[in-house]
Length: 210
Image 1 (cartoon, rainbow, N blue to C red):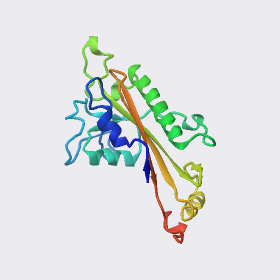
Image 2 (spheres, rainbow, N blue to C red):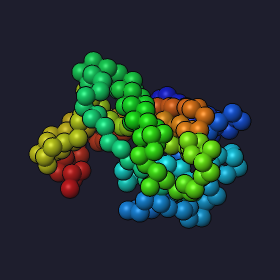
Image 3 (tube, rainbow, N blue to C red):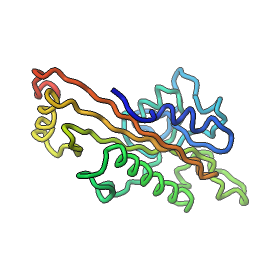
């Protein structure tokens, strides 16, 4: 079961029009830059600048972008995520959206200040263009919810097993956000997506946690 505007739709719809750019990209396992394998880079027919700047260290996000055929360079500037939002009362979709935008605000500020210049691709610019950072940036966030509660990342194996033990009777959901921002124009689009996973009630927790 899925709800909300799906991230793939944000990519296709949000930046297919002419005024600016934001988008997603692809990348290799541990490298900071990766080129697509067999799929045509979807940013090219949309006229978006490549490679994408991926503001996330998530292996899964890198894999998804790689499978989409998007060129990307990883550029991460962490923030204090726990200081943002209210996990007890805020709707999960609102929380992940807030966090995705907070990550983007911070990363864009770092780029525009010049503190990321050594890590940016194709960074040769004439003096009058030095502040025209023609890049599309992607940030994202995701939480797991179960039985009306947002589950933080487990801090131990026993806590992970405790979380998983609930899944047979209370279907967990992953709630994610994607934010795309074109640095040169300031144009931004975002979306959220919810996926609910249903386990058999007799599934032993030990088989789901390694």
